[in-house]
Image 1 (cartoon, rainbow, N blue to C red):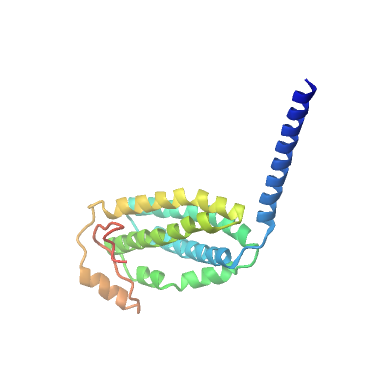
Image 2 (image 1 turned 135 degrees about the horizontal axis):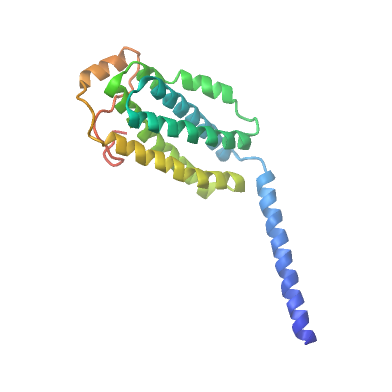
Length: 211
């Protein structure tokens, strides 16, 4: 009995020690400063957030398409929540105001401001598809490479919502309910604002998208 009791005590003690050490490692990982790769990701993610919010708010102001309005509202709600987590992780190391200012001057916004009707709606949705494909890849990479537990968890939790918005944007783009739009008219309108941003008015897929 004494031997069995001693073995049990040792096992329990070792388990307690392992849990304590594991907890300490996690805490240390969270308290460590972000490395250069993680910091670059945060800057990119916050910049993407600022641009997506600016685009979505412009869509709410310009579009009359219920699908576009619903998608833009979803983008605003999701990105505002995500922005709070990114700002908390950045801990003041990134100038959010500068990112918002840059977003307002972004060539995407200039191109979208020059468009109306279906030309606007399709270009807006096409840009959402492209941008979400790119930023989702960045979040997926951070899930694998980051050693910061909170950042890894944030990236892991953010991906499903981003993928959901990508799926919706693709569905809207492929809906086939668009009115005929002049290809040249959309390009000319965008060029007038010194932008090379293309307008998207055809159903596309991630495989065949022109980026």
